[in-house]
Image 1 (cartoon, rainbow, N blue to C red):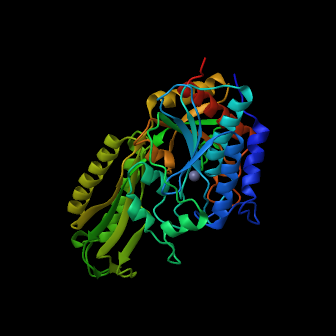
Image 2: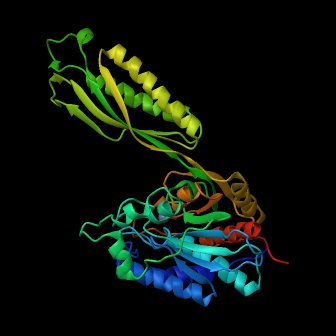
Length: 408
Ligand SMILES: [Zn+2]
């Protein structure tokens, strides 16, 4: 089987990491800054060296295309992002873009042409630290956000996305085009692969989210004179709800998660029965139907807990982000490719969002995860092993070739 050049992939990552390098070995490459421009310029330079045709769209997404042999075949794309958190790592995002470039370089070396065109994409502002929202470029591309609204978004100094794109010379004109498939290689940003000594994470999709604001209303009363059986203790009700959120997350299938991360107790005084609690509930699941069932269960339990504790519990849903289930045939391809290459692999879901989550709405999509040290990311000390990065890139090469098909 064709293999990528592991040293070249590593060297490209290290060369890119010099742009915006921080003292602790990370990078600071905030989107649409001059440092981001330097990173983009280097990527574009390498792509041109590899014979790729460059296009930039109105939100600054870069597409580097290697022509196919079959007229009309939809491009097969791979990519990620070149921007970083203010104190970010060398691999988050950069890996997916450099892995795409390495796949192309490997095909060039081997003289392999494909029937479908191959594209390497670098999406604008995945991180969302300088401009909100996150996954801005892929979100506009996928039609989740309106271009004009996004171009008017401003950073903390009042600079708009439109101005920043013009300043760095990446306000392009290319229009969105249809893709036959999209693949994204990424470090896991969590501990599962490392802890289970697994090289490749076969990503089934990303968790959907339902967030609730909860207000529990009881009655303030004196901690001494008020008998237990007449109390309307809002914190008691809230505490029972916390336990039930945990029970929901540990009993429902499909990678269920449940978190109460915020609680405000009133009046928060040691000798007063609490009369009001404001809290949040964050439910996540890989399957939309299961996520809905979790939310329904939460609502039912809130009603019964309110009744039993003589309180009122109001649940307001404030965020709904549907799960993204990646294309089964492409996910199977990642699994089969890992197996054929002899890498240990396991199915995994992404707890974090990626550009692939938006791309999955408009094209068949899959992701390849590789381990990162201690599961740490969004941190300057983020680290990954060259051999794992190479393995993920080999899987990427394999699935890309299967989809773009070698021309005879
Ligand atoms: Zn990322």
